[in-house]
Length: 304
Picture (cartoon, helix red, strand yellow):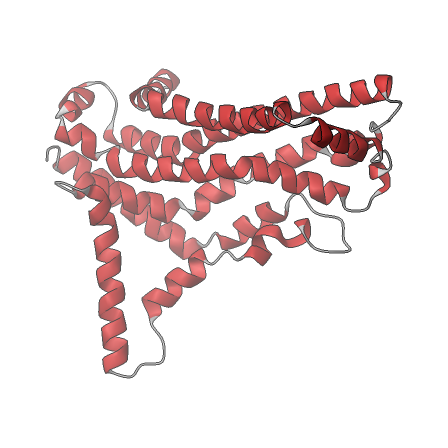
């Protein structure tokens, strides 16, 4: 195993999904940028005057408590559609990455290359868990910088043409730290979702057809059986259901925390710490077991 094999394997995975990984984030970025600009262009004259009057009277915003909170929430809001779309693409990728190569028998070609099954499985895991969301986050970061450029131009026009200075807002925005904090969420998110990704890969390598159903139906069956047994025996709790609920519980309070809390300065690392707190050793071990089973099936079951 060498670096060229690893790089080539990642390129192969990205190449197979290049249309999805290019057009989906690009379409979202174009829509987010074009929609407000089109709205501004279509404003009527009295609406434009009201907007200009609002901006003209906003030169004291630099001293308003909570502007940092507002700016952080705005940036996170720009990332939301990209993150949600990335999650959907991740689910699609993990349920098809090993199934498709068995269905079209291309697995025989890929396995004939000097690349081990261990490397192939690990590369697919890292591609889906880190590369796919990173591409969407890169598109979201581009959108943020486009709006920052537009805001910079707006500040310059207001400063030169209307004698309104909004430059003080830039010092309160903490732009770089906010963006870094959002990017830092990628790793704990991947570790938290690792058991889910590993389970989807296992379903992908095991299923003869409809791998997504193979991923969902066993979980649904266990929940139904557990619910029936708990009701029939009058048991107080359901172990499997409660375990899943506790592991995936991610309430609004955990997500927003200091971002929307009143009276305190927001911490851009709130989501990072919340995600990190969800990572557990038992779940990681379960995910590792799923990954070993995925590797075993890829070696011993190479066709649909």
